[in-house]
Length: 424
Image 1 (tube, rainbow, N blue to C red):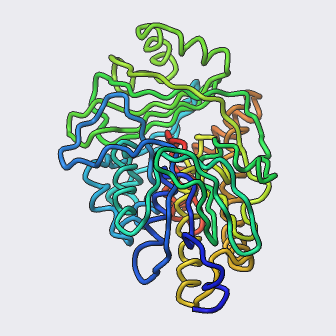
Image 2 (cartoon, rainbow, N blue to C red):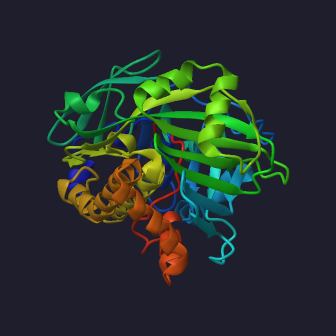
């Protein structure tokens, strides 16, 4: 190991601030295989419950849609065998525009695949990723990082929490806390925001007919609506809902009694699954596209929602972050083999150059989809309706759209399904 790596002494090579799904995944990728980085994860939350073999779902669990590309990556990393125990395959996606005939139907069978993607409850996905990372990682939780103090050869993290040391040092700090802690602002990094004047409501719902692995994306005058299948049983009638509405309308729906909520949702979605019969706990948040003004500095990387937060219409938040984490881990693990400093700016700039194209394409696609499907002008409505028809009429159009949807476009990007994503 070279002198830069050996001096001065630090507590850890890499400290990951935030132990959510993205932080846990990166920890797993950095602490497995040939790399021998000393990795710490500092998480402000209580550790999640263990991923029990006899997993029992809670009706109010949140879920994440994983693209086919993400699933293939998890398979290569020996993570999917565990995660896939409680994953619901999306075998078909039905896309429609309320008030217009036709639409698009995307089928896994037509693509020669078993699934277009999978839906996994976060209460299962998060502990699976954490347990995969814990074996070779120091986990400090519940511990808050109060400040990140940059230095020329290390970062100092000032901590608070029972049994937490006052300070730890590291050569590289990865900020993967979802942007909620305000640490990025302490460091002078702001987020550029495009507010959509929309609010998302998420909940689990039940209905009369089995979903049979079908996901539904429906574009309405108020905003996009999606139902993602949950539960692999043949007669499963449960789905994860994301319903995008103007803020005032969303607040009214959040306050409405269950029967009123279900009536209004039925009116927006239609009757393809029969009568809606139940809605679980509802949650809501304002929607925006947010991008950090900087994602890398010497000894600092922003990852996950700390780096970029997307509208759920493209379902790319977590899937994009998986690709980011994979690229960062690949570069850092190569640096270990070359005995290089993981906080070296040239390394981190290499990561940014590799990821910039995919991030730009994915965020712009998300933004344009929002604008296209929120616009009620007749010309734009006709254009998107023709786009739906074109999926069936234009040779290769459906195949290309499906490739993007599954996150398999040239291995670099691809819009996912509308998804329900936790703060990472």
